[in-house]
Length: 546
Image (cartoon, rainbow, N blue to C red; front, side, top):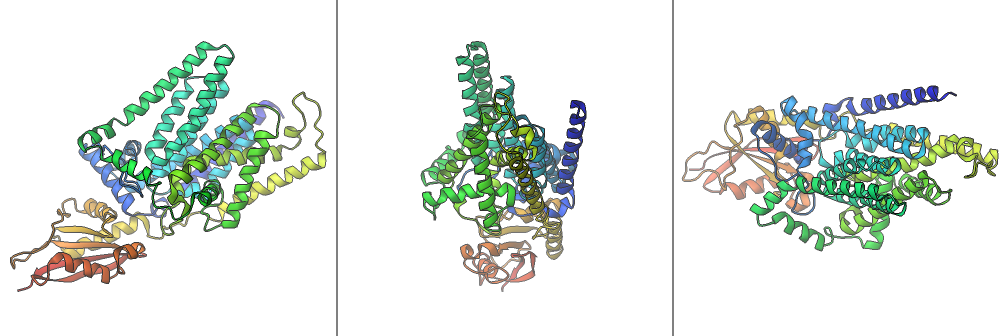
């Protein structure tokens, strides 16, 4: 086969893979993404940014700890919000597009390490990955880090392999964005920086002083971009008595959250989650499959990184394999909560920065098997391989079985067409019902538990009626005068233990009684309904009690 024909076939294959990735991510996009407090909060911030010019100093709040992610996340989503009139579906589509681009970048990285077949395999695995598709179909800050980390890793390898120092600036910038999109994304920075340090040492050992200086200059630009990106955070810290820093220190000194599992046990659990999530999904949903694919990743890393002659591929596999080891240990130590799976909430997106590494390692291993004689036929000095032909052909069959098995598993487990909570369309319906029930009166929003904001309802309500939500008072109705402000309570049954009672009546009524100040006022429920499974909305209208 001529080189031109091979390039054409490869281009057609990559195009088909990207089309498939887009189809899997964009079909039924309005209803597939979950809609909860995080999504409502992000859309409120984007609305204030693009329509009111309010620049956020902080990013989204972290799930554990009283600090925040980086604000670059909002700047990345701002274009989609601006051109669409702050439409959640458009913002989700922007994230989905990023997921498609991540497929291409990951394929490019694998190709540059293991050749065209490895690139096609990596792109295929990520295109159909049920986990990667889910990450592309709802609004959440961790859902961008697969793209940003893929860019960081691909640019770093390009800088190393092509000896082009300017690519280190791209790698550094992408690593900074990964840190902003999720605080655990800082784990990726040492992985990229380690290759940069190795590049400097290699150039100095080879007498390339000018090249070493160029790499250090690129590292300087990386640091400069990092410092500039956190100027908004510095402004916040200056005006808030360093509240973020103090909260982060308290979190880290506390062991990264409450640890119900000892560190020796956390390491394998976190390892299985990091290695298994991109290929077979959540560990609790597929425990046996998670162990199998995690073993596959380890075997490929050892095989192609330590049991083959010296080559660029071996160097890359060693680098990526060491990066996974570092990731698992760092997360086990610094994020102890990852040892526990919380059902009903998004899981494992936190470490999606490691997803491209997993896809690339597995792809290189599968490609080596599929190419059979082409990859195994020669030794470093071009002598014929001693590996028997039947063994090579068995490897081809094994590679095909593994590839088809992973593709079939993920195609059969794609996210449903409609999210369990109905997504953004269901939130719009719930907001409309609340506004109808309040008859145009001003309303206040409360949430149970109190630590979870009512933003899932606030954004759609304010989108339909911008002035409907009034400031939340400490009590309603005083002095025997009627107060026409309705009080809307959003209650999440998932947190019923924290709340102290069940949603759907008991929890909301107990909260209302403590707020309304009986017996000065008597209240009655205008409307109560389950807006999504386990999420109840109650509308209270106070009236005089005398």
